[in-house]
Amino acid sequence: MKKITSVILLTVFLLAVCSCGAVPDKDELSSALLSPYKATALINDGGDVYTADISLDEKGVLSLCISEPALLCGVSYGFTGDESYVVYNDLMIPLDEEKAAGRFSKGVLVWKDMLSPDGDYSVRSVADKQKKQYVMTDGKTEYRFDGDKKPVLIKNGDITITISDFRIKNDKASESIGADIESGA
Image (cartoon, rainbow, N blue to C red; front, side, top):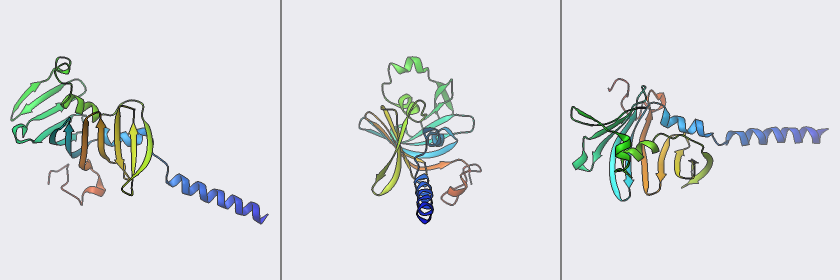
């Protein structure tokens, strides 16, 4: 009887320990990029390097504002479900994605797709420099998330987006890190 009780307790303990280290599903991981957020990214696009501030607002508008190289500083791109546009100062120019797709094999249209995960992905857990990370991939694009399930890297071919200072809008835990995004304080 003591052996049976010991085996049951050991089994319950092992199940509890294993469930704590469970790998999140693709919906849980991709929700970070599909919910309102603000981030800074270093984008290596085939050897060309850009720095951009990226945000997704409550209305689903994805914005990329280039800060480096200096030649493109202040140029922003906006994407909604149906519209794409380029913004410089107060000038907004619509971007026809169908016409631009033939001219842009790389660039902001590909970055937009990489920042908007959609499809079937497999998820696994890995250790990178002794830190737990989750890798979500569809065989073409790889997303890496830290232990807090925030994106840190997106890779597709020779394009790599390294994300830093990722903050989910109204993320109470990150308010001590920087200014309140909502109020702009």
